[in-house]
Image (cartoon, rainbow over all chains, first blue to last red; front, side, top):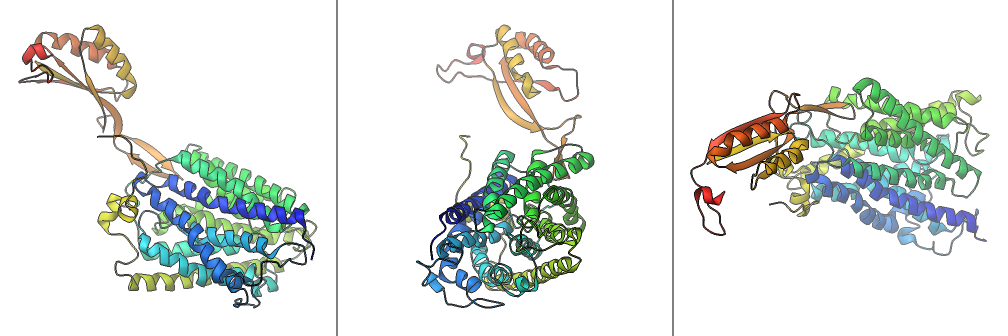
Length: 408
Length: 112
C-alpha cells in the first residue's frame, strides 16, 4: 500500500498537537490551584504522558483496536507487527497508534482537576493505571474502536463521549469518594496564577486543532471544517460565558474567558467533523452559558469538584453530544448523519443519548469500584492527611516548592 | 525617643518616603502587611463564586525619631498618606527605651 504523505503528515502533526495539550491542561489547572499545590497538579497531568504511553504501547492499543465489539484482543500487544503496516487509506499504522495514544493520555489527566488539593500521589498512580485499562480502554473500543455503540450509529467525531463525558463522570465519583477539601466552600481558595491558566487555555485551544481536525485522519475538507468549527465554538463559548457572568456576577473575568473557551471546545469535540455553517456558533455559545450555570450544582449539592471538571467536561460533553443529534449534517461529512434540524428525524438523538447514558453509567460504576478498592487497600488511603492538606501537596507529596522567592 | 508606626495605603509609600526625607528623617523601614479596619475587606469572584477577602494589603512604615521631632514627622506622615477615603490607615507613636547603632555601638540620640 502506498503511503499518502499529506494525510500522514497531518496525522503525525496532530498527534504532536494533542500531546502538547497535556502540559497546556496542566497549566490551565495549575494556575487555578493555590501556590502550595501547583506542582502536584502539574505532576498529576504530566505523569499521564509517562504512564499511559507505556500502557498504550504494551497493551492499551491492542485492547482498543484489536478485533472485538466490546473489547479488543491481544493481537497487537507490544505493537506487534505494526511497524510496516499501512492502512487502506494510505496511513501508516503507527501514525494512528500515536494519534490515538495522545487521547488515551489526556483523558485521565482531565480528572485531576476535580480532585485537586487533596488526593495522595501514591493513590493517583495506581488510579490512573487502573482507570486507563478498565474504563478508558473499553469505552474507547465501543466508539473509536468500531465497537457496539459505534455500530448502533452513535456519532462522536473526536471524543465528546469517550474523552469528556467519560472523564467528567469519573471525576464526579472520585470527588464523592475523596470528600470535600477542609473548609470548602467557606474558605476562599483563589487561583494563584491566572496568567498560567490563560497560557494553558491558549495551548489547549491550539492543541485542540489536532484533537478535532486531526480526527479526520486525513488532510481533507472534513479536517478543514473541523478546524473552523473548533475555532468558532471556542470563540462562542468564551463570549457566552462572559455575557452570562457579567450579568450574574457583575464582571467579565479572565478565568471566565478561559473557562468559556474550554467549554466551547469540549462541546464541539463530538460535533467537529459532522456539522457546518453557523452550528458551531450555537453549540459553543450554549456550552459557554450552560457550563457557567452548571457550576452552581456543586454548591447546591455540596460536592467539591475543585476545578469544575463536572461543569465543564461532563456537562459540556453532554451538550455537544446531544446537540449533535440536532445539528449533524450529512452533506458536511458522508460518514456522518442528518440530525433533527437537517431532516434526519429523532433516531440520532436517541443513539446519542443512549451512548451518553451507557458511558456515564459504565464510567461511574467502574470508577467507584476502583476508588473503593484503592481506599480499602492502600495503607494510607486515597486522601492526604489534614496536616498535609494544610501544608500543601507540593511539599508533602513531592518534597518540592514551586516558587522559591527570596524571602527571609 | 519614639517609634512612629504607620499603616498606610501601598500606593502612598513613595509620597510618604519623599516627604519624610525632606523633613530630614535619616531612615525608615517598611514592610508588607495585611489587615482590616472599618474599611473591611473586599470581594473576589471566581467562576461566579464570591469570596470575602477580609484582609487588604497595606504597608507598615516605621520611623525612629527624637522626641523633639515627633509632632513634625507625625503630622507630615498623616498629611501625605491621607486621601480622605475610607481605608487610609492609622499612625501611632510608642516610646522607645534604647536605640543602638550596630556598626559603632553609639547609643541613644546619637544612634538615630
